[in-house]
Length: 99
Image (tube, rainbow, N blue to C red):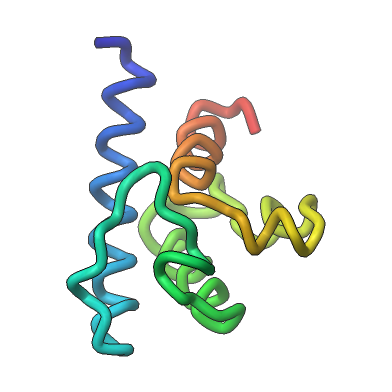
């Protein structure tokens, strides 16, 4: 297993915890969360939920991970189709200084 793969697993685990906390507020904490999970279609997250998630990412990882910038680079249909795996990859790249 490469360091990046291990990092992606750790980030996925961290993100799953953050998403479960967010979903719990909506009574959806039993949702399946994996790399292919879509924020909009599968988790039913709204834009305000993504703002909350952005804050949690910054609190957890610091300023290296800029979720707002990551989202700003996408078209609306790309944001709607955004998967957990895409965000995991962004966080891993950001922490490695590649984003």
